[in-house]
Image (cartoon, rainbow, N blue to C red; front, side, top):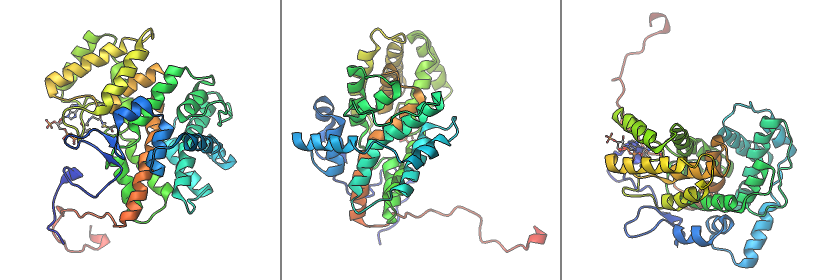
Length: 372
Ligand code: ACO
């Protein structure tokens, strides 16, 4: 056995091998199975990336068409799941709705012999779960969750959200965002999924745990927190003053910084372009210059850069997506990366179980209950 290494937060620890992606490796882009995120976000659709991550290769044209048909055929929810969703309190956070939805589906349709089918079922049905619940609590409507006219995950989501055919720019912006969020090596939620998988637990348990980890504002929840931050300011000047005050008070500025990246997050510039494009003519167009001022100030004052969450926030806002649905979009995408890691972890087969340094009381004499 190797000598123990103490690394709070597991900073700098390499906990295993992966063939899925490269994050922050010297001289290498962010890549999914060798393909640069720049190429994927410029040329691919999310379904191609999902096929790459879940099924191991970029699809050919007939494979992509069959994959889209497969996913479209898996959108309908079991009646029991709809009943479960209807019973959740209207004030539930949508991340809790998805976490519950996966857990309930794991009881109704437990993992079978092919985990990739369970993964495809979740890729196809996350928008259905989320928006069936959202529309039900907003208006009492029981929508058709299958959105038959839309053949992509992005189109399915937007069609169910707005009840109309999506604007093509909004559809592509969301599609690009799904590509950017799909995979990121041993991040906290993926690691949570790997820990659960390493106990030889089932797929739905791993994904339920991963959603719980992603929900926090230091991880996926930062896109919602970034929107709340940007939304406070009505001009770039106000943002400049407000962020200076927050920094002086040593507050965290959400959507900035990263555990692995030290100079920039390659996903940020790509989604930033979409935020800029969609801001034109929008009634809250000022959010974009507000964001740019915050970006510049954070770099000048703290040498911190926007991560994937910062400009995603305004890009989503400009697509008419309510803020509480931002982090669930991350789930709709990251399910692909989580699945790739669940499959990889199963092959690795080693229980993940670190140890802790004990810093509690010294051995203490037992005190009977009547004497405490
Ligand atoms: N705002 C202000 N200061 C920051 C920020 C920030 N967003 N991020 C880091 N810092 C500061 C820390 O306060 C710390 O300063 P100190 O040395 O004076 O104490 C220093 O930079 C180092 O930061 P750590 O927290 O030690 O870095 P760590 O690697 O542990 O954390 C994290 C990374 C959690 C992402 C952090 O940068 C953060 O909290 N950012 C805001 C939340 C966020 O945007 N999360 C999204 C992550 S990306 C994703 O999930 C897609």
